[in-house]
Image (cartoon, rainbow, N blue to C red; front, top):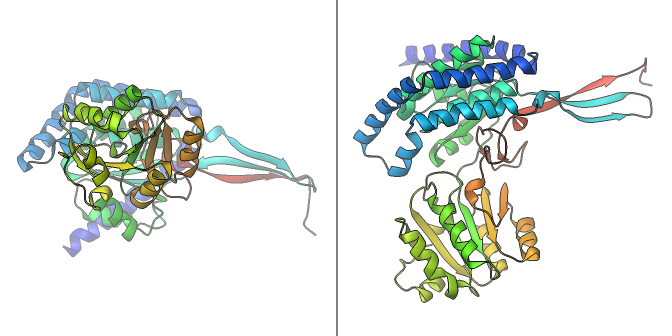
Length: 423
């Protein structure tokens, strides 16, 4: 075991050194070349679509043998349309403005010194993710556009898919002259690679975990490298007293049931007591028709006694499946208090025709994303116009919300003088 651990540490050191060299090359690579690499990578994904889907079928077969949940299976599954979506994401990233061409600030001091704050890449990104194989393609594309190298460590459940996607991307990037070492993947899914990445201070500049709560909490607890992450997506939709009833029904159904396993899915529905008698039964019927189950507080069960009672723990649960917690609340203050107590600072939404109420809700909610009259499932880099995303950040350092190409840059200062010396 010790010899194997040494081999893994050696692989990571060499991989990180190679990635560092690639990142320095990318930082100086013209935008046109980086964009050509993205388009060539997209073409390679399309060219190898059948092979990627076949590799994914191996992962699905292994998953089915383990009898995992339907929502996790959906995260893992690839078909031709999802491979096309990955490729289209790379094309969309190529169409974005160059994040490395940005002058963030420019000013002149009284002594004549001109100071410019300019965007630059992070360097080497470590991406640790579970289940969703498309994350590898999204991460590689975003890192290429932003001039970063990336080491991808996917989960064991998606190992065949991850390697097939990686092979296609490397082939495509190489056609455009992009260094092959800008996107690296460990030779196996041994868990020791995660530990090695978490301890790689000085080799990896930023770790981004994307997966379940256990993975993210482990990364946050053990990493000696800065971490950009969210632990869970416990998202709320609040239907205000002055909501349009038809709009509320449509948004809630989408926010919960479009894809129940994504981190932007609504997990708790809050309904204002003034509107609940006219609305709750219809929303429950809409969701139940799609297979949703419910946990409700006493106020909701007063209206619909057949609802299962909710415990306090239910309101702290990210279901990631067709279960919804429901609370009828007295007013907007009660809704905000509920979110403050149970939320994860990910995404919240209010449905209302009252502009003042919407502004107050959005101003008061302390979450990375807050929507007004729209589904929480719009918390997504592609929907924000980022082309794709490498994850969602809910912390308060560096960036929040969907992480795209701009969010994977930092900055430095360029100072121009005319001979000044400091007294």
